[in-house]
Length: 182
Image 1 (cartoon, rainbow, N blue to C red):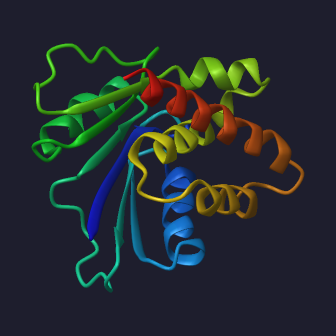
Image 2: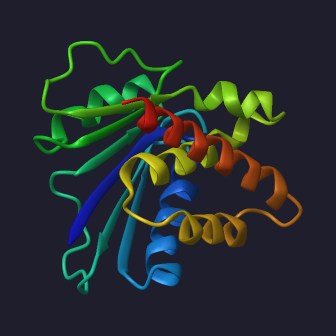
Image 3: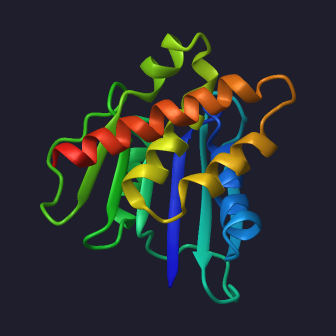
């Protein structure tokens, strides 16, 4: 099994941390292999930003994503730029309040969450990425919940663990509820 994941958004949304958490969950807590590559625009905060993660049962010999199986888009710019790269039948995860995802191909599995709004309800807009990571874990089933939960807990700044774990749980259960209704 080899899964190629691309995460895109703008600097300040936690795109790189999201990719780091997914890779760490796979490599450290789920006994898989993982690679991560990140890319920033000319400035870090506010400009485009993306990260690529590959998760595999075998060692990863080529660390670049060719055609992502999963695209997580946190901004309209990332959606527009990276959607054409998504593999046929791929999984698209979007931030519903920031992205107009009309005119999708019918073979794409699309899941959407208002992660910014949920993060604001928790009191800190910057944790929208952790909400998105929880949602990713629920709707893709690429990694088990406990592996991703532990990766979040060990990756966020000290003193923010409980808030970030709450954000993860909100995203995860939003995704589980969405799947149960389908």
